[in-house]
Image 1 (cartoon, rainbow, N blue to C red):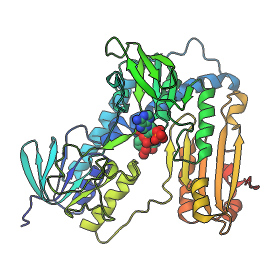
Image 2: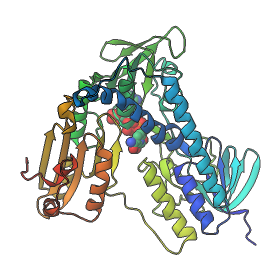
Image 3: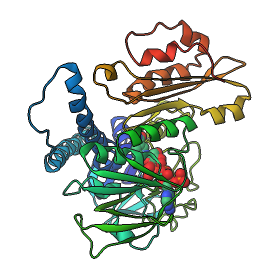
Length: 455
Ligand code: NDP
């Protein structure tokens, strides 16, 4: 008999935690998992899934407008009902929570509903109940931050956004990252008057520079007001409340009025109350758990994956990290993860899809690069007279001809980039892109028909 209650005890039932618990259980390990909230973590409950569902909803606005050019008459007024969307979204999420529960049950994982703390290298305490484990895996994710400005309590975060009772008439979104552009696009599509305020002058500053510039133009065309080089200095309101009009004072001297002020200003790893320091675990300045290539902290029996290690805060990355842990601890061999060429999509309107190096990164890494770009009106937007355009860019190593970066802003960019990510993993060259036959008529075919470098 083992000296421990469990082989693996996972703290957190989000993407990374459930994946590790489930596959460890399937491999025959005795697994326990603690979760204080709903199963599925940020992604299922207040992240990727509700965001994408709401993004679908927000697209109907332009579909209705496009329909006339294609011969359709939509009689009467098109009305949107926020309460219906939220109720249907919640129903789908409850369904997903149930699927996660069944996955854990199927792998014979003991689920403990409660808040877990770490007492020592092999002991967790879930609301007063102690469990020992050979390995403890921390997969507690992160939470959204609010900047420290006067009146910040009048503002909300993405966690609150998904539970608003009404669609705000006017919204101010602060930030220029993923969440800011996605939620600003959703609010705009659903009918709110949106101002996005960002302290720099280019959205999505960690991505290829052309993407943020192109996206800003497209967002502005859809009616989103963009205020750059400014941030929120203070929020004033007579009282808290969704419908209450707030005065939003900006650092550039302007004052905006809005019912909803949304902070999309980054996320912090959830380690604050876990007791990890007591167990001797070293944390980074922002609270992230410092781990090695095996996802072990400096206390080797305590491991961590996902947003709580703050490497790449994406669900598929957390899943891959969890698989590395399970393979080493309970599998037949070692497995590793490469953080190179991770494709990602931003579900702004229009979408962004990107994989590989930005032009700037490529210049630093290989010196000489060739750049191919195109910017066009997609066929779908011809009859409809929709003015949204599509942008595509390839970054190529001039010496080896390898394609180092594939970037797109436009309809279905996320769907399109996934396949190109495989090509980049395989080390595809521009000549191989050129040899590939396009699929006509699609937007994606432009990626294999760009012939003349612009730089
Ligand atoms: P990001 O780090 O992407 O963006 C945060 C933004 O807030 C930046 O523009 C930042 O400005 C700004 N900011 C930070 N602090 C302040 C401040 N004090 N005052 C004013 N502005 C501030 O974080 P998000 O919260 O948008 O998203 C977190 C992570 O979640 C993402 O990085 C991504 O990994 C993941 N995610 C992925 C999605 C997807 O895959 N589609 C969707 C949503 C999230 P600056 O640029 O100057 O630092």
